[in-house]
Length: 176
Image 1: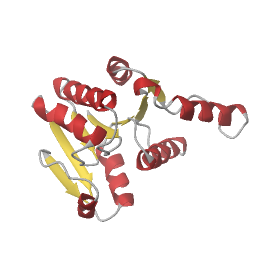
Image 2: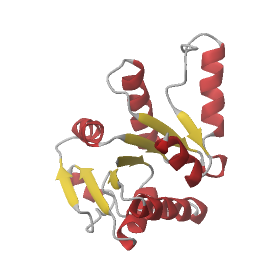
Image 3: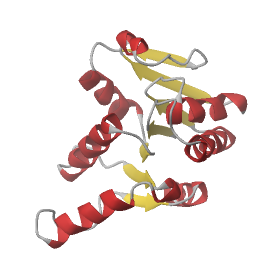
């Protein structure tokens, strides 16, 4: 399975998050899955990729070359797909991935998350989407989404994404 990780590339985030991203990468490799990610060598992306590579796993980085002006690109990827724009990058994520894991991140991560759930709602993909709620990072966002649902702004049908607080929960969802 090709598992796409959305997450921060920041070097300033707390170790509690990057340690969990590293452990997630270890499990991706141990379960013979492939990591699909934004190609960054730092933050959540870099930690997860390092966990994959340290355990002999495969990864595919996807990014425009100019993103290297903002964060270093991972040189250990099994494959790197260079694209011209962030929109093309997101299309490649969808094309190359079987499931999406949203880990803690900033505006770029939220952009990717809201786009992928919108595509699923509009039946443009039917792939699993899981919010990895490390250390309750997404609690306030999830409360906001619940409020939007309660006030009629979102459809009250079955959830288009799931929430997991641990790596074990992620793999339980993916194995169903």
